[in-house]
Amino acid sequence: MKAPTTPRDRARWRDRLVHLLLPAPCLACGTPLPAAGNSLGLCPACHDRLRPPAAGCAICSRPLTGALPEEWCCASCRHRPPAFDRLLALWSYEEPLDAVIQGLKFRRLDYLGHHLGTAIAIHWQEILSEADLVVPVPLHWWRRITRGYNQSERIARAISRRLHLPFSAALVRCRRTPPQTSLGRTERLANLQSAFRIHPAVNLRGKRVILVDDVATTGATLEAAASVLRRHGATAILATVAGKTPLRALPGPTEDQLTL
Ligand SMILES: [Zn+2]
Ligand SMILES: [Zn+2]
Image (cartoon, rainbow, N blue to C red; front, side, top):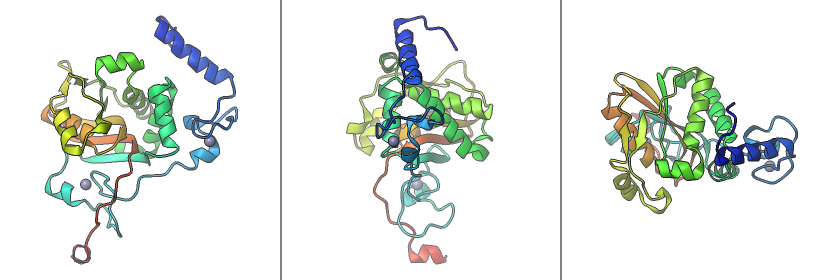
């Protein structure tokens, strides 16, 4: 581990040390954590409340109602498939995962990125091990400086280490985008157009890429990033996130579709 050199590094080390030495409270409910085995900074009861996303489209993971045949895709993905091959979301982005993600993003608890990445790598090991590169969704340099690090990079590095796959900062954010949460889907896509480029030293031709972000809401950020990777020669893209914001379920397959 690198010795702290800048005031920001020192602050991060201090936070980490305090968190290690004092009986830290559970990030979600505040209960003092036991001395060991606190994955994600959650007490065992809160950890048990983490839920997988609702059943949905095999490609974009949008929730769908009714009984779903295996590998069923939503109408949107069948008519116009996204730039990524699949969106793999480990948990639904609601309590208590929101407390973990906020700790990672806004409280400088960067080790949570390691916990999240390791959990993703273990859960999806079989499918992710086929890839050639692990690439995080980048932050604009200004946001990275104010936050201290890119939370998606912390998750991506843990996946890379766990699965022994090369990490690559292949994507570069070339302009700042306003916070995505205030925008609708069409606006998000427009907002993200041309926000990403590929680092000139990286060759993606023929590469199978794991694209990593912390949370997906509509998937617009991943779609924009994946389309840039695809344009530069990536042949397969697995978009991977720790949390997927629960969206209203769309109608699933009709009786006719199920009996075909
Ligand atoms: Zn708790
Ligand atoms: Zn879909």
